[in-house]
Image (cartoon, rainbow, N blue to C red; front, side, top):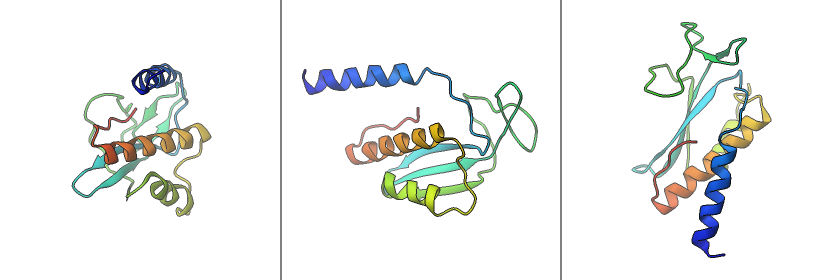
Length: 129
């Protein structure tokens, strides 16, 4: 199998796993992006409330937070780091009160931080999954 074929296979597997249901973390969610000018991986943490249907609600308005489209909400906490490992240490080891309470959420963030780091290194576009 060539590197190109392996990359396509890995992408196909990853895409399939991205379709599965994951319960939302009651402590909130992160928007992750790459700041190329500063050479940083950035993560904005937002709080939410999870309703009985499993939907994320804005704690201030009680409105459902849409999955797509632009949403104007205040950032709870902003993190940035040079590497995925550095960002994980800041979020998981240096905070007094955990911002992540679900193991699948923590694993997802680690994968996304790694993808963002690779995009920063290679110059490829990073789009959060």
